[in-house]
Image (tube, rainbow, N blue to C red; front, side):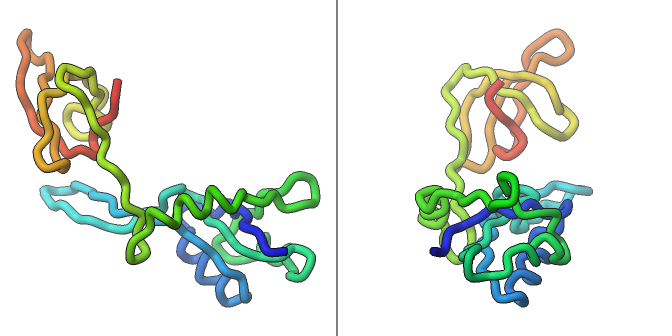
Length: 164
């Protein structure tokens, strides 16, 4: 019986592992989402793994030579309990696949309420906490930061903040 199993990959080698698993006749599933990166005044979007260092593989351990997965380029190991691979419930994989559109997982933008404390994750205000004011079209949030003895309004990308 075929099930899904979790594979732990080498750092940043999820795509290489998936390609090599395909070459061996396995069916990998690497859920990815659109991520925005800001660097040197440039904004670029790229596909990033939904679960860094993990992917899933569909197989029948009684019919396929699954131990070869551990020797696959890009793979660290298949998650096992003792000598048996641990199946991932089909409902978990189905829930992820239902959110997939054109090979990309659609993520809901986090929703904050006015006055809620939020923390800046990166950039020049990293680790600072502020109060949520509003968002514009889900891409940027406006918040109040305590700077220089007063509250200063600033605008930051939604991917750079989290609830405090």
